[in-house]
Image (cartoon, rainbow, N blue to C red; front, side, top):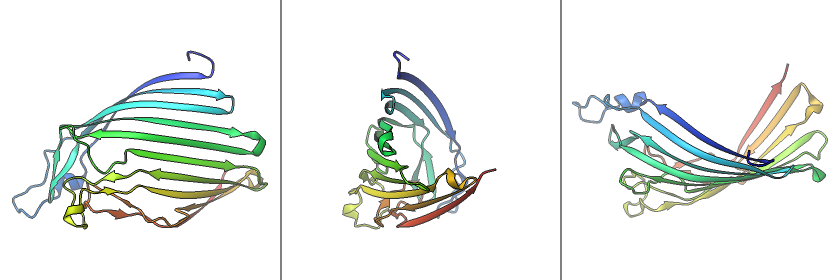
Length: 236
């Protein structure tokens, strides 16, 4: 803590992901193919430097820089075949602001991420968005419930060069557009203690959007439309 209200952290982490059953044993149409039992686990190593600073007692700014490498990344190389790449490198920055405005019973947050991922040959990969953004508020001014609307935006993504898309061959490398998703949550207050009810509506405006996949069928996958959740909680 170089000064009051400011902290700097350096972090390092490692993680391992073993090949799945499908990746190890799924066979292609070739009857002599015995699967991919020589696959190695993926190993992630990542470093991060983060800075948190209180602009005032109610408002905090967070900035994080991170960089890492996934060694022996498991990639689809054909029908029923998987192989280990040497590595994938990634780096990025996250910036977030959160706080509260007591005079109007309001809390807020906003954060954004920029991400860059490279193949072992230095080329960009598809699938992952380079930009993501979230913003939301919680209003506590009502007697019985709090209301939390929030917006998530995911930037455009590039389809991989070997993508088996159902679009025309000439469009397989086109960018898949970004999308916003608006959600809202309503939560009962302590007035109902020990009971709590949480109502969540996701994708309020029924936005039609897709994700790209790499390790499954390599098709654009349409995500869920407007969805409702209700949670009943009892604390004892």
